[in-house]
Image (cartoon, rainbow, N blue to C red; front, side, top):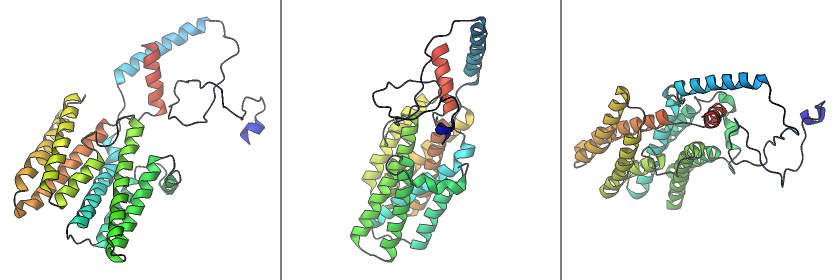
Length: 312
């Protein structure tokens, strides 16, 4: 309707096949096609004294960008996602362990914990009452797949422990949980352009497997996954750009609680509860560090990135 009502004919629609894609500063390229086609001017305008003034303004903006530094995702806004992702890993690890070990699962407590986690994940949204629309793009969006897999995981878990006591149902629920964890990791992998899940110490998938090995008491798997997380965290610790005192304390807490103490306490049944608590604290600290370092490419940051490239 807006195209039809455009009085100057500046807006139009039609087939875009065969036309070159024009890169425009400030537009984040997410690989979605078709998109917006920017038609360049037919004739280049002559340079004027105004251009020098604009160049001076751009130079000043460039200096301000260098002085302010990159904007990061704040923990103040992302704390609900920290809790949600840890709960997702915990629920998966606990339920997957019940498939291999005789562990009792309370369906009411299990489902309540999952619902609370999903409710917390919606707190950081600007328009919370429209959160349900995030599930409609399952074919193209990892966020939609995350939400759908989370619902499916909780439903299958509830059915398998209360109604349908079949091994196939429990295995299906465990597979849905794996898809949920992979989708959570892929949301951030796509947003940041980072590697696939499992190549970050705070990976929700790796954390879920770690909790599974702890609940099922598979010490060999626990040591293997902990070692993998330790190697990844070592690289991330060395490459971290921020080394403030709170961040250093958080890192020490993560290393001691996550890697040293659990290995010492898992030797006997009396220390398993304490080791589990320390393990959860360590993973919360690790996930907090992940969100503290998280940089999502927004249109504003794309403009800053383009200006730094063009003016630098």
